[in-house]
Length: 412
Length: 186
Image 1 (tube, each protein chain N blue to C red):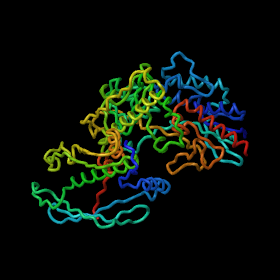
Image 2 (image 1 turned 180 degrees about the vertical axis):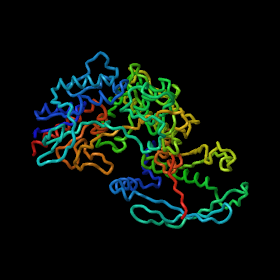
Image 3 (image 1 turned 90 degrees about the vertical axis):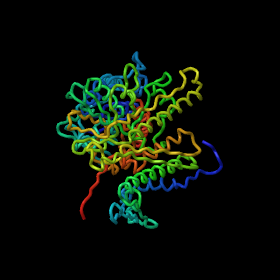
Image 4 (image 1 turned 60 degrees about the vertical axis):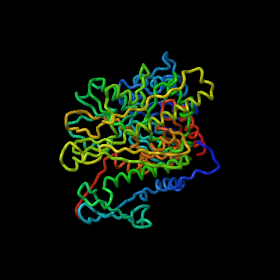
């Protein structure tokens, strides 16, 4: 049996950043990784995916973007390469190809069964990410067997789909990107859109993430957010990272010929039924976007930026086609593929410690797991701030959790 | 928004609603409600419904009194028009739900309402219910709700009120989205 002070599970951006923080504090640790460093970026992301955040924002503790395209958006392969070089830079003690089977409590800490080994550690940091499994709604059971179904984790490119129409379910970042890419391949796309977050790629000459950071929105702390449950379940914004920095909202998709319908409610005898509430879902998203743009404009005034950048303006409201169908017969041959862009879930199924709430989620206070001293979780949406959802948020999150862990070890 | 010395009062107890949300999140079984009505056929298309009790907060609950509803069809349908049609009652339910939502959201957001009026219409081609055209559905083709709202708030804030009210409305949800309906013989 091997003994170490801390075990980090997962060598993605959060796990590696945590490793760096532990090294800074001379806390003996290892990082366990089921595949290679940045495994999910190598094996579970479609090649055309780019980060939603601009390159200048893709920074980790002790590492800033140094390339020649700070305003660009890094492709998945670039993220994998960046994380691999970051692992070398910080000398992260990563044990690759080591799947964690179970983590349980043990006297004075935890017992981790990983690969063929049994490890003991006083602290465990879960950094396996928020997007390990695809969330597929229960209505999927009603899909006729003639239809090909696919999740974004298995999707690579449109060529992998049969010819014919595609129903993309879900209109967050993943759904809008894949709808556009698949429609451009000549497969007519219907996009089922429920509640969504609309944001322009750029506003007044700046990237939207510049505004989200400048206005302080990304820095909002989890314990200061009115409705934390809602904040943590908010769908990802309808953004894509493209070299041309184009906006990918529902109006853009409609102009491309994609048919937008309401949220998928149920499938009965092979007929998919969509919500009649699409207009309100769009109205809510427009209102929310405009509230943020008001905040941005106000910030620009108070910070004397008003004259230096293009003037404020508003984007056209989302056009909702009044003829948007409420039903689509999946057995008619019109659609040959259904793609579930209905979100992702973390996978902590190997964690054998009773720390979950009734919905199966780990209970934690800003990443400090409730009821299991020495156990931490990283890389979840709005873990400690709204920035936690994005790569650069790991810097502050790992600093806070490493400091907590350090004092925890000293007290014991 | 106008700032006045008077506290905002739309007659909604926001503290109680927020308290309920917290308490029920901690005790989810108490959040399971059953709403019910009982309907008795009178004659022709006329029926009489009563609403008096429901289950919730882990117990049987009674309304303050029994509420009664006569449902019928109009004379142009060769009926006696002893009450509103069932589809009009659905419109009443939707308008009532959205209006309650407007008041609650306004109270929560500190917006004083002076008046709220909703006009609701459902478009229906009755060839559907007559079975005369299989391509026409029985139900509404579209429902339109027009809110006239006088309140201490900008037009955008009032639009946000009605958007949020739709988002949290039980009747909006059950009209807009499919609902499983089980009908059986006793």
